[in-house]
Length: 405
Image (cartoon, rainbow, N blue to C red; front, side):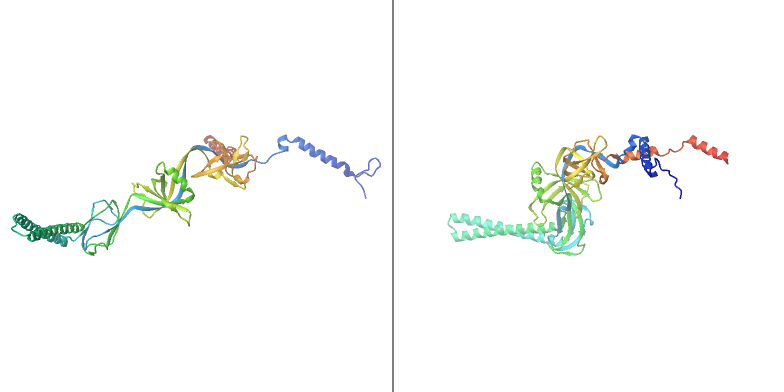
């Protein structure tokens, strides 16, 4: 068997002994040939979204769900018994105070009034006669032409006649009232509902409900907030009724009212305190029975530092944000969050106005990591992509193709 490697110096040295240093030299030479930056390259920057903290006057709200109720609700009933002869409005109409709503057949009550007036006239005549007799007996008593007993009888007759006149006058007033009750008027401005009894039906006094009217201008909303805020509500409400906003579902324009009532007890089962607010409701956007989003405005924080809600993270030691530093690296910053204002959070400690924080992409971050915004990446990709040919280049390419054909 032939060998291709010849021993050196008479010793049986293996041919692989000189190959190992050669390989090490080649590797070192290759490394020396590379630029210094490529010999040790860090991880690529992490794509994220960022935002800057801002300062502005920020209101402090308590949020809840409210139920809209009519400011006043009246069940219209008739105060006399009779036939319903006429209705002056349609169901659902807006009615005003003093407007004629219904008419009950007035003829029986007109006759009762005439009878009462006749009785009154009779009693007045009897009173006049009793007065004349009393005056005559008073003169005769002075001359002792009549006895004291006869005088007392005439005095008693006059007193009874006066009482009967007063009774008849009361009967006339009652008859007038009953006649007036035949013409049913609206007690307040409001929205009419369903008419329960229609014309030509007999109405029983104080029993049958004709229609329900709800006053909706103004209107009230009842809602509840946690009882732990009761002291703050009372404190801020002392300087004047607190402002309340109501947002109808599906709308972005809130109605503005004021707090009108704080309940005198906290619900033991739920721990909530019931509140009531009044709204002008001039456009009638609020309607009885609606459920609305309610915001009770407690106070206003002046020049508060705000950060997007998405930038705030929860950790074992509390809440924190990723702050972008001048060298485009990120660091963890513990923060204390106050109240939420829409999609922004009020930062009470930990951030200054104008600082940049990460709002998306936090899961792949670590302290000291470099970042690049997704907007910067988009611009770089647009610059790296080939541009569309201009009109002259397009025409030149088109003519070249036609010549080849």
